[in-house]
Image (cartoon, rainbow, N blue to C red; front, side, top):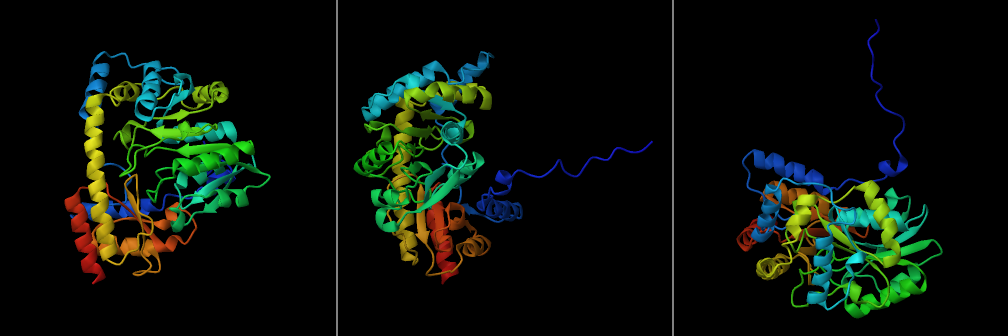
Length: 394
């Protein structure tokens, strides 16, 4: 009897999958794990994940729910009580009325972005995507057979798109604009006035504006704002991961114009069934006064870390051309020390035990000049990282 042989492949890979680039930092992460397994002490400044634990009230809410044993699906749009809580949060913190009916709870902010792009993108549609910017944005556009058109943003404009840039780049196939405030990797913000101008421009052209607000709440010296205060329609993405410190819970939300909610609901039903039920019940405690007090103390700690890191990097000869006013990143020009930031990142890791993310992950605008440092570790470790880099550079 002949032995069954499994074929080596199941036909050609889809073009969209071949064209998705990896997270280049993952190679760096793999190396950090190897070094740590050998006993090396690595200071992690490459990961965009708060080092603080999930706030205790959130953990306790999850525990209370789980003891009941009834962990079942919720509606695809999310737990009604959580949608109401998010709506109340917008009203009390930002003074903005956002009906709960417009709020869709999702499997992380990535789930929110996937839903929005699935609903809005036709094959061949072009999206204006800031460069440098969050790498998933351009790859998600490609996954839906759209075209991510890089919009080079400059340090003199706080690495945010200007109305003149968007006007010049907008073409007959442009579907919309994606922006982030605060942004990853630069930590910069768009002013409400500038965002209102962009929203008005996009609306006049019957395009779509997607605003990433997942670092909302993590701003320093500037009160947090929301694009939902605009008089123009937009799609706003948010998350429980960053300000609320719930990365591994994988929970976010999307606020959409009312007319799109039903179609987004159908997509959510098929894509995800529903978001994580334990995570949603835990998140009900995220807006409590006790939790907000914890989070505000953490925000002040991030602000102090930012000041230490920015000052230290500049003393070492790195250029930080746009002061980060939010998130927990510093985007530094390392060209005074190296011509290839990816090679330099590996050099810092091997010789100093300091891990940072090279610019190649964030776009094609001179990525070899840039490193992103995340201040998601405490001040003592940041000081140690600066001392180690000083020794290497000397």
